[in-house]
Length: 214
Image (cartoon, rainbow, N blue to C red; front, side):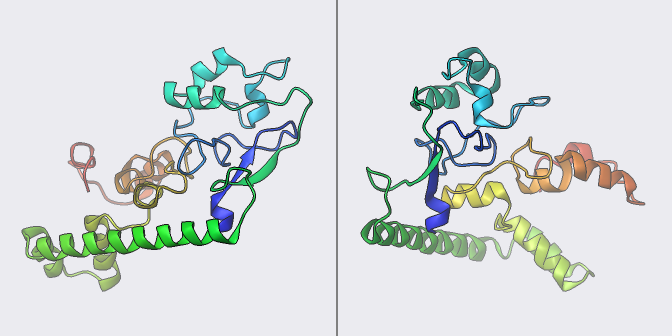
């Protein structure tokens, strides 16, 4: 948990990765929410600065959403070239304390219990629908039925689902680095998956129309 909640304060060591690291102090998970634009070559945070070691505003507006652009501009930059350093997100001075760690762990536990309760009630309410009856009647291996069941319940641990339920992590697909990693993106829209579909000896004519919703 401590590692998950650490953030990086921007300095001049040129090690912070724009799309992977937690360097945005005003967001729940510390990462930018803007998907990486196609063709964007910027990888490190220092590439977003000008020769005066200040934020390159035109570049920020070109790459990021207005929300992310505003948050990035609020991050102070050291004129003396301070080093990148980690800090704890739940104390004012950035130092970890046992008390702040306990409070955050308790909050995470409460959210998990609430989420499990809601998902359980939804599952029981829908278990007699025609979709579930059809799934139970399929002549396929149990592990495939189990996978389909997780997709239908929205509990498959895609990046999007984990980010939505916990407010942590990155919801972007780590395979293509572009779209939000939902069930539909994972199975149909990811560029790598599209290439895999072309290799399979099967075809579904209605795929393009139906793939927006699992």
